[in-house]
Amino acid sequence: MPACAGQLRLLADETRLRLLHLLEREPLTVAELTEILDLGQSSISGHLAKLKQAGLVHDVAEGSAHRYRLRDDAPAGLRGAWLAARQLSLGDPAIAADLAALERHRATSGRDWVSRVAGLLHREYAPGRSWDSLAHAFAAVGRFGRCCDVGAGDGALAALLAGGSSELTCVDPSPAMVAAGRTRCTDEGLANVRWVEAGGEKLPLHDASQDTVLLLQSLQYVEDPAAVLHECGRVLVPGGRLLVLTLATHDHAEAARYGHRHKGFRDADLRAWVRPWCQRPRLTHLPPESRAPRFQTLILSADKAASSLQPPASSRGN
Ligand SMILES: C[S@@+](CC[C@H](N)C(=O)[O-])C[C@H]1O[C@@H](n2cnc3c(N)ncnc32)[C@H](O)[C@@H]1O
Image (cartoon, protein in one colour):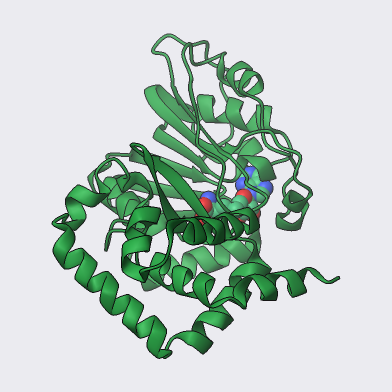
């Protein structure tokens, strides 16, 4: 039987649809749902268990209760089916009555939004509180000095970095990316950004000329990551900082679709590659992404030691 038949059956139930409409508005416990829907607790628990098993909702323990919510990372087909069912049922009088009951519940429960999300804020939506806005805020106070962005792509992040940089050198081997990046920076009036078509294995920069070097999801694209990280050490001033955002080692075939040459990196390799110029690199693994196949970002930050061994003087650079 096609999987979609099971998904449609899951959604072709009045109580489950009512539950989904409520949980879409806010995460709720079984006790709250029982009160709002005026239905028996065991019936509600049974329907929630089915929705949870299908991957459409999940629950988080809260004291002795469990708070249920819609999953952002529900299987794509099921999510699409729910959105279609939602559209069809939105104007239904029973759904409208439930949403009105939810409003009354909010008004009488005495718990305002702030006290309700205490301890859960890391997974709650709050208007304007996005990772995107946070990145912009931190970049606005960042001090990058003379900064080189290796594998800068089309400059999508240049505006973010240029404000905190005295000079920003964007390096990328792709002519198409560099052309797009130049156009973007000209259009945005970023006068302190220059673009160079080159690979990270051979940076067109003088020794000890950069305060900050960045590789933002580009290390997995390079041919020779050890050579690139060696180059980063060469161009950094003593005390300068390298920041690499890349992927932890994985086995996801999808990486090929994005043109990755490497299936992420092992901590030990990254450490070994920066060891000639940095004694204590820091590595941080972020939680796997919620979206399949759940790539995991790895952050490497490495400060160049004041007395690190310098690679042989290079005649490269400009
Ligand atoms: C996913 S994009 C990241 C772009 C940018 N850092 C960002 O976050 O918006 C990866 C970039 O790495 C670049 N790349 C490929 N090989 C490279 C190499 N050998 N050295 C430096 N960058 C390289 C690609 O051309 C591409 O623009």
